[in-house]
Length: 84
Length: 377
Image 1 (cartoon, helix red, strand yellow):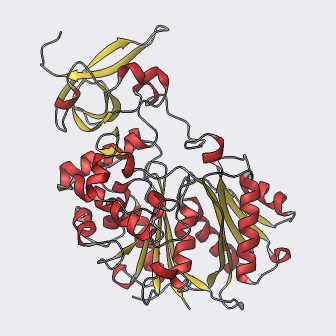
Image 2 (image 1 turned 30 degrees about the vertical axis):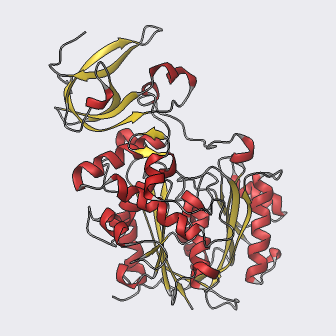
Image 3 (image 1 turned 45 degrees about the vertical axis):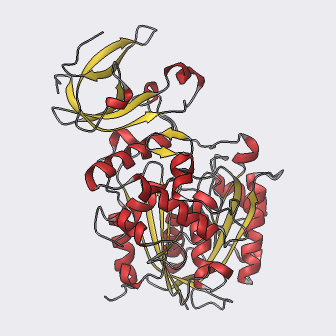
């Protein structure tokens, strides 16, 4: 199945305490279940926005960030929002 | 409704806890053995009569065999099925079927963890899937936080209703001399406690303690001091991790409780006391809905009507994982509290005329579901 990379936030949480020190510098951050337009749901982060603006039903689109070691990590950003 | 043939043929003849507390020098195997010996004494049965051992704990590769070895016995049946906090409730069904079909005479089910003394946090064998690990979710809190968020969105469940679950737990715990947090909470205190993973706060989360417990099962026609009959059991398993959850607001407690009710020939209206695994406040809201005590989406309203002492429904009368104890998996304590209530041995927190109890275990992220309906006499 191919995906457009667009979807909506099905549900989410703002993480306030990191599971391990690697994530400390990122607090607070959003972990979300994203419902892709094609149907499947996946866990990801919603980035590049104020965590307080994230809400269920929010349109998002995929972005691939460099996770090191040649890995690209899919995260989601508000769809149509201005980029920094 | 008519009870099915398996209903009531097996009874819980003994139950006991061991090492419930903040510090211990015992190993989990020693705590499981201590609880087993106490449960056997409670049942007035001898260790030599035990021929089936069921156990679960994150500490050992083969927990049931570890416990048999610690007890120094050679059982003809063991079962270490691990479906998280639902495990021991599932073991009740497995043991019941073994006893009814002649595969066992006296079965022990045990659990223990010393996580508080060892690490001060949850000790688990849960592997974080590669599709989830890079995103920094707190296991298992963030997944339950997403359940709460979605439930609030779909059904209008409020932050205060979630807090009320912890308040009711604190009221029950204040009446339980074994509870490790006995001070009363207010809704405001819960909502003002430190944010962990929105909307869940510290006081929405279970304790991190040591502890263990065991129950002993035999055929119901065997002489026992105060037998509690296994009237119905059911299981259902829908997924393993959050990323494969079919729903964030509806759990397979619907299926597992339906099976347990059908076997028992009973329904929610016949239940006097309810024990639902409360790793987090939202679990009770969802669990009450999915085991049939209110319409879907009305769990928060039922909590508001009262699930504490003197409330509309007696739920988690020990104080639960939120306030009594929580050594990693709370399932065994749900069963033990149901037994104590049905035997009218629950002291100040005794629910009057408790004849039928429902126990529901949730394992992982609502992944494992096991329900038991238990009855007095």
